[in-house]
Amino acid sequence: MKQNDVREHAFAMPLTSPAYPPGPYRFMHREFMVISYRTDPDKLRAVVPEPLEVTDPIVKYEFIRMPDSTGFGDYTESGQVIPVSFEGRKGSYTHCMFLNDHPPIAGGRELWGFPKKLASPKLHAQIDTLVGTLDYGPVRVATGTMGYKHKQADLAAIKQSLEAPNFLLKIIPHVDGTPRICELVEYHLTDINLRGAWTGPAALSLAPHALAPVAELPVLEVVSAVHIVADLTLGLGKVVHDYLA
Image (cartoon, rainbow, N blue to C red; front, side, top):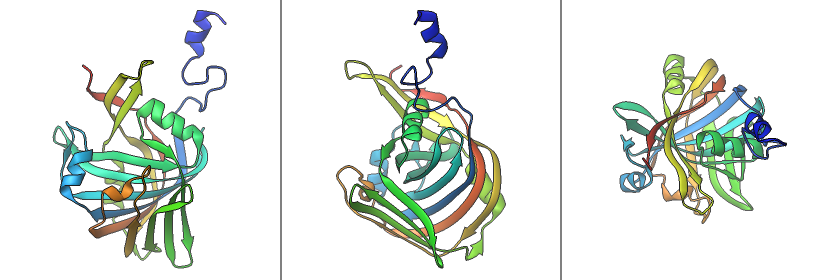
């Protein structure tokens, strides 16, 4: 293979059979259960990197079902997202994510900097309850429950929240183990078709785990919960801060 061939075809690894195709990445019937809870403000500030600023001691614990996504397939995801402010703009910082599908783990980390790890999350309706779970190996580390479609949510407010900026800390090491890329990345969800959104009573339990430390941001009080079904496109990102500059 000639050097020009490498340059023309290289966009992801492995070169001859990349783990994921080029975007755009469209998600159909993407289903969220998001439980917002109050946590320890000092522990929250300790995990949010500057120049992001913590606005309130709130964490959004998400369970997301993605049955139809271009290039990535059918999978489920779970993790913690923290409301933040960046240069006066309100948005969200993704603290951790756990999912059960290799292509979006590889693509999410390499393209955007999503903090993705392999685990076994689930989201499903069980009679009158929406149930989300996260298992890391044989250990249950998160359980979320919500009353199924108790009350319709404010659709305009939900769509506005989905359109807000999202921030990630992208880290790619050099061959000697030092950071070669260390950047704050901003991305947006686009072309959103909101199919429905509901609120209801909710509960969340987090258990300690050495490699899935979601319980290090403890649940002090559940504030709200929302169940969302939408079609959307995961937009590519842009660098808004370079920690190595």
